[in-house]
Image (cartoon, rainbow, N blue to C red; front, side):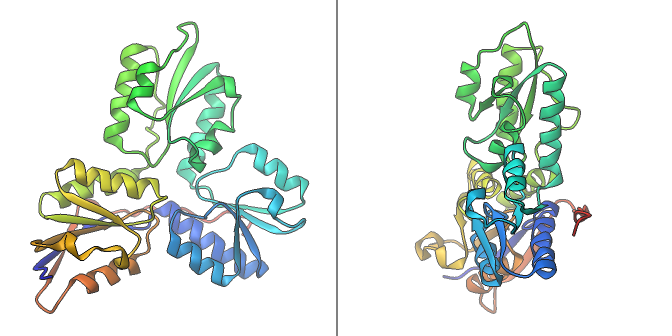
Length: 308
C-alpha cells in the first residue's frame, strides 16, 4: 500500500444537530448522574453509542423498558406524541434531543394537516425520523413514499390539497427526481417555503462531488445505520468513483487499495473526527500528502434546551 495523497472533504463529520444531541446527553449525565436512558441510539454511530454506554447511558427501544420515575432522552431523530404521552404516564423526566431541523418538519406536518392538506412524506420506511413525523398526524392524512417507483404508483385525490414533506437526511438529487415525478402527476402539490433536506446533509454531498473529481477511491466514515452516511457513499458511486462506507479503519479490505495512490475521505454527520484522524494515520506513511478540499464553511450552532 503506497498512498501518495489523501484528500479530505470539508465539511464532513458532526453537524450542528448531532453536536447538540451529544452535548445534551453529557449535560443530562452531569445533572442527574447515571443511569440515563435514551430511546433509540442518540445518533446513528456505533462508536458514540459505546462511549456513552461506558458512561452509564442505557439505550432502549420502548418506553416500557424504562423504570418509573427515571430520566430519559429522546434521540436526535425525533419522536411521536405517543412517546411523550407514555413517558408522562411513567412519570419520566424527559429531555428532547431532536434536531431543530427535524422539529421543523414535525411542525409542518401538524400545520398542513390542520389546514386541510394531504401530506406526501418522502422518507425511509421504519427510520426513526419517518416514524416520528408519521406519528404527528392522522394516518389517513399522510402517505410515506420511499422510492421513485412508489411515487409513480402514488394515487392522490384531486379533491384535496397536497403538500410534499421529506426526511431531512435524504439525497437532494434522488429526492428532486421523486418530487418532480409527483408534481408531474399532480401539479397542485406544493412544497414548504424552505426545503426539508438538512443543509449539512446537502453540504456533505456537494463536498463528496468535488472530492470525486480528484481521487481514485473514497472512504466514508460512518455507521451502516446512518442514512446520511449511506447517501454520501451512494453520491460518490454515482460520480463514478469506487466508494466504501466503513465504521472505522478496521473495516478496510487491503485489496480495495490495490493500484490506488490517491484516496478521498469524508465522514457522515454523526461520525467523530477522531475516526478520520485514525484513518489518515492508517493510510499514510512519511511521504503521504494530506490536503483538505473546502466547499463551504458551516458556522451554525444550535443552543441546548432551556431545561438543562
